[in-house]
Image (cartoon, rainbow, N blue to C red; front, top):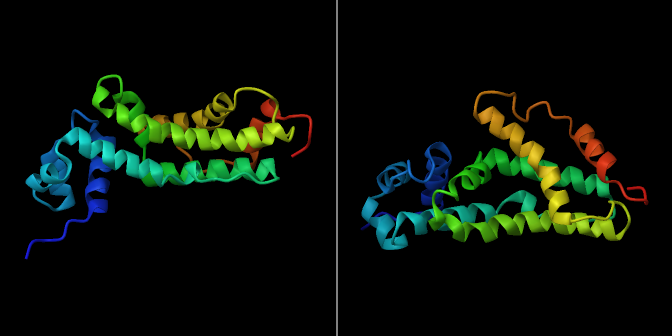
Length: 190
């Protein structure tokens, strides 16, 4: 009886190798070995390395905690939840988003992953737009404001991956959110 193939194991192996080595440095043989399956199984199921990577990345991004945050009446709480969810996503998937951003220009075959990435960013923007409508965050482009909330966290993670910085441990969540609000606060208190 053939071994049952768990797609989650394949995706986890593909994501880990992609973050470690990039698209060009990852082979289907490496993915198969890490997932504990035969390389032929990957081609039967996905057809190509690009299709496999796209499926794995889309799956990972669809489950990203920061893409699941819903707005409430408390802007400070929502921003804290978004930051915590981003950090949980980062911890779970390492530098997936940063690796993807760096790989897209050289590997257009990964372009199918960008809608999933944008969906998460648009969710955060939707939470911010909700608070803009209530006067808790100043008017402006909510996508840009979402990037301004997440980008410093992404940069800290990126520098840590390069061995340059301390990473996210020790981040004062309240201070981070308060600093963000100082630059984005609307007329109505949070």
